[in-house]
Image 1 (cartoon, rainbow, N blue to C red):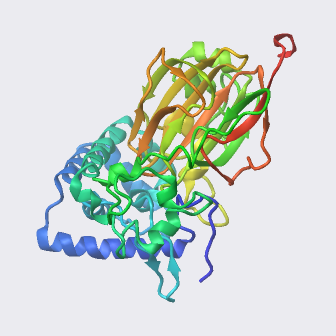
Image 2: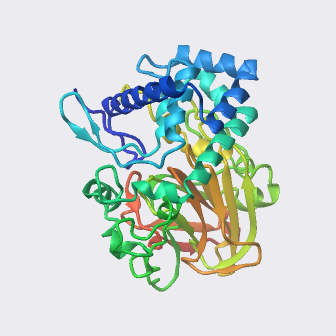
Length: 428
């Protein structure tokens, strides 16, 4: 069976057969557990009650099943709930998908999203996953799982055994794309221990990077911008508008909507540039300042977790709509916004951390009035894949380094672009 490749740098499996193998094995385990117990876990049961108490949500879920691609294996709410029972009481495992022909493929990084992926890419799914009441319900479920991932029990997959993240397979994934040797790159409390001293899955996921592994690249004469996150380039757009049609196929950035109606910020950045890149589950998940300056404001905006703009798929495959919807997610998803003022001509910039799928927490670690330098830690994501954007005003002209291209992985604290400041009289 041919494999359909995805340019998502580990966020999603490389082919539909990997999806099918993962979901079929998960459902087999879920049915066995449910047959023995016949009760949902408390967080899943609360989610069930929230959904079933709202006829509109039940109707939209059933319509999404009808509208979904024929490859969809989640054919009822009961099946979804049973699968969730397995996921939310365990830490993520580094288990390879072994296909029927014996081919071995990569582990799954975002299991809940894989269950919902084909339902997401439907008109009914878009409506359901955009509903505030649905996002309140799913947030409670994700928060419950997030609390578990901070417990000592969640560290049980931080081993060098099969299924562990420090196995040969796990380390190969964590070190791929030039990330570097794990022990030389990240801060580990006890590098010689089997779990490297991480007391929980969350402690492992939010691990710090060693300064020597990701130093702030020395700046040449002139002004530069630094990479704020370890991430893969999604897109760069110039002359972004105060208001634009973000819901159409091109997904233009609409600053008024990105900043949740904050005209003060949007007006200062209108006509400027947006740089957006995404983080895979294997990436380093802390955010760093791309410039020197002073923090002006920090805001956490609630939004969606699994909503996407439905599309016709890629290469005939309907999966991955949420990854293709990243620009739209800057106006729809749960996000943290940190604005920083640089007095050396760059002026106001905005860093936007966009929570996607299993990422239910954007953790801000700075406050208004704080002084930051390039590389100062701003905050972090907790679990999953995610996206981020940096917005510059119209006076900032960026000359990107040669390696800054769509689908190319970037290291945090590297120089992203050289900056020239345009004369205000030349800005139309």
